[in-house]
Amino acid sequence: MKKIIYIAQLCTLAFGLSACSDWFLDKEPQDERTDVVYFKTASQFKEYTAGFYGQLQGWGSPYGGYAAFMDVATDLSAYFGIHGDVGHGTILPSTTDVRWDNCYKQIRTVNLLFERARNYPGDPEEIKQYLAEAHFFRAYNYFFLLQFFGGVPIVETPLDVNSPELYGVRNSRYEVVDFILKDLDDAIAGLPKETLISTADKGRISYHGAEAFKARVLLYEATWRKYVGTTTDFKGSAGPASDQVNDFFDEAVRLCREVIDDNLYSIWNYNHLSGMKDMSYRYLFCLEDATTNPAGMTKESNKEFIIKSVYDKDIKPGGVNLNETVRKMDASRKLMDLFLCTDGLPVEISKEFEGYTTPEAEFQNRDNRMKSDIDIDAQTSAAKELKSGTSGYGNMKFMCPARVTARTESPDYPVLRLAEVYLIFAEAVCERNNGVITDEELNYSINKLRGRAGIANLTNALVDKIKSETGTSKSREEVMLDEIRRERAVELYMEGFRFDDLKRWGIAENELNESRMGTVVGNASYPTTFVDASGNTTSKYARNTYVWGEEQIDTQWGKLNCVVVDSKENFTFSRNHYLWPLPQQQINLNPNLVQNPGY
Image (cartoon, rainbow, N blue to C red; front, side):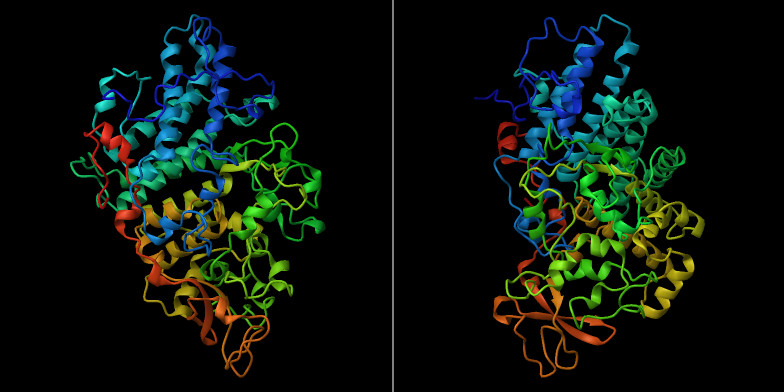
């Protein structure tokens, strides 16, 4: 049929009615209803926009499931059960793509609201907030499309089967970015600050939420243009109209300052309470009621999540088996060595690092996030042995120990938190100033995260020490940027940023084509729990389960052997894989759509 719509489900008529007084706990698929008597009151617009919140990433996601957004198959992970084609660089065009289909379906529900708003009989001020929310969610979906596909068709109206836009060309990534930023500006102009959102409505997008999200977009696109440029643009795509890189950095910094300086959000840090044992970061991600953390805190204490998907174990449970699933997502050797020692120095040079002789040793005197993210108890028990072919580092982030019944885990999902705003600020300042950032700016931003993590502040003097003692050939400006990127990697681990970060920095093909390694097993000159002084394996290590054998890493004690979970022989990631292929069905239906390079 020639008039089959090329955007799957594009013309599904969706209306959102929220029957529950707690709007955020009832975001089921929007009902099909007639709008003859709908869109007549402000409350109806409010109810309709409540349906948009199911578009946010969460435990139940319209974009491929939560596990696909946990950095699996990246260089920080030794788990390839999901997204293995991405990590290995074996992506192939598919007939359909749920991300493309669902994003355009969501965009249509937003465009429908704009269309109906033109005929609203009341005062436009009554629905200003809900139109602003609609602008945010349209930008949210287009940013998602941009990250996966680059330039895509921009659709501003709810199309029908006769709409000529169905056979239009792709817009360039630069046009899409401009469209996203304009939508976010419109959102910011109409959204309330957090203090003006009622308790019953907590979870709705705020003024600062839209500002922070715009800062995310600006940093992403500025670094993409700086390091990737036009190398991934589809054939025939127009380039940027002007050089906006520094303007984007400047605007990102300004927005971060606004979010930070209003003091409406704060880092969730209760390390001073003895029962927390410096594990605030651990409990932040499983925070529900007072039974889910030693301090007896509830979700109401969490002022760190600026945008979140809201859940409740009784009314709207997460509905996923977090405790079982995330434990399998083993961390890689690379992540383990990214965690700094408490003196702020990397394991290669820190005198506080106790080495790898026992499983317990490498966890001593380290960043609190390491023991929060990695299951140390399992790692140091007799049950955790190198016999299964895994890395030896079981993941613990997002696990909910207080929930022993499967699928009752219901922490709120962090779509955007204050920690990311600090990271955006520091990176944007450093990039804008060619690697220069003051100690004052570091204290204003990411050193607040290092404080919770229990490690020394990042300073220019510390960067000089790292450069000197590691003997790197990099400039001090490059070392500073590396340390800011390190901080981002460990703070946002498992939150779905790593693939996009590596791509926008233009280094994905370097970082993703290395072997994924696990535990250090040592050798005859460096005996460990796994290899004795004769170089023989102990009862805790079954070498034959590691089909890719061992590789060596550089340490303070020379080169030491690590188990290999997946060999570099299996990785062929290239610049072409920075973007996904457009679904073939869409190209078949609309020949004006040009496929991405390399597919």
